[in-house]
Image (cartoon, rainbow, N blue to C red):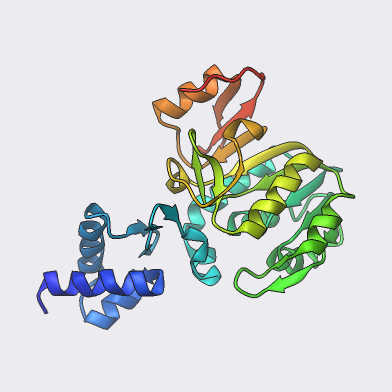
Length: 273
């Protein structure tokens, strides 16, 4: 098969399935994984998909990001090294005795692993996190209740919204699909966005945890403005535009032991770029 024909088929496949892996494509076309990576690089340059760890996903339908439609099991395996780095950096921000909210993101799952030896209270909508932390006697674990969503192994629905109104958190870690200076912190699932908005109002400190691939894109549902969160943790250094934005708006930027970027609010004056 000619490479042009193969790439056309791959482009169709990723738009039909929303995501593909390098391994499955290499087996399907009986070529090396390196050949598939070159194909994906070409297709990304043409704007047809976005490469990720071990595969690719369709990045936009119309003008909205659809990352959250990716299969949960795929997302859990994607970018593990970056998520673990972010999780270790989150651990440095917590103390024993804290009450912590963890959302249903796959990054939050790795945060749960990092804090499993602490004496803290954890509230979560994630069944993956709940089941993992249930084995640790030192963790006081609270489930929000709600309707089980198999697609993301989490709880959703009106019950969660009511439950969150009675809790207050020392620290909360929320993820997102996309983050943009102009569009703010956004998500493609309305249920997830509503929960994260409520957590913002119930927490002393809220950190957005997002790997570098989520920057400078936007999704359908706005969670909040970037400046509404207390801080942000990502796995790579911010570019000059973001560093300037945070500096002008009273945030400090430092590197963690894992070389993650930790941004923390120190002031309240807003300056848009």
